[in-house]
Image 1 (cartoon, rainbow, N blue to C red):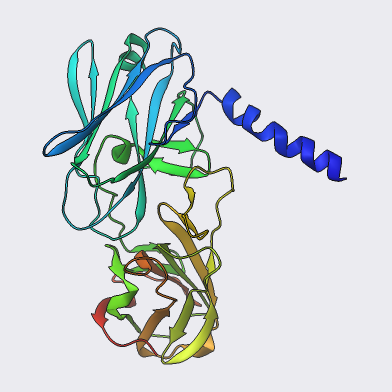
Image 2 (image 1 turned 90 degrees about the vertical axis):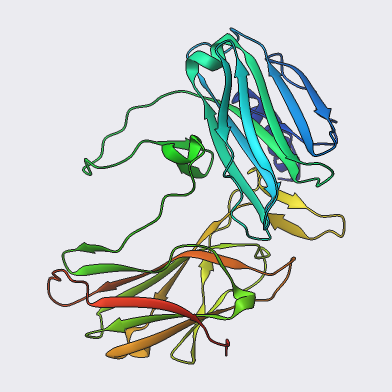
Length: 326
């Protein structure tokens, strides 16, 4: 069994390489594939530029997905351009979310532009060491069936599904409240908020639901740290946080041995309805501060199923305010 396990682990790098992807790090210790002509760092007085030169004609019919892993934060410069045969194209310059965390964004170079070859230019504050890693993947268009005619196209890359608008440099699309027959999905908080700010999320219920699901996205939380949910000043339990596959390039090991994940991870908790009451309900999250400014959450959503069909307006209203955690 040990020999078999060893052979499987040894085969993993080959499988990843065969997928057509490549991961670059500032250390520069990885040999680039044939379709990458060169990688060069160009320090500047105000802006540092990293240039990835892509050879033409080696991946016809495929678009080039560029996933950037970087240190986010308040203020600063972080933008990406594609310099090709038709000129310079700004892929994204609103990539920072203003949260102290390791973050990730995926941008897309179209099939035509990528086939003709060109340069990826990543620019950030001089001396900031903001850029931590870059993953380049060749992707192909694929058809899929959906019952939702309003579905927007997206890019599926490893364990991630990224909206097409985001791959074109737009900020993450805001979510809205939704009603599906007997189920209401109420958005309690869309933009990022740090748990160090002791946020409290409030939901006003006209009736106690039959089934309740709490959902959010969390960042800057250590993989072995608990995320605890409190409801009306009572400990509800530990929220289940998604753990991406270990071959996901978003995993980072720091110099002190700690492990961090770059980007947002979905977290969910099945709520006991007996913890809720008609009227205003208070939801709070608690977690170790850990890295930097501590964990942050966004897209906090409460799904509630009632015993009868729900019509607009929603029976759940929400607001967030700073209230100390228990």
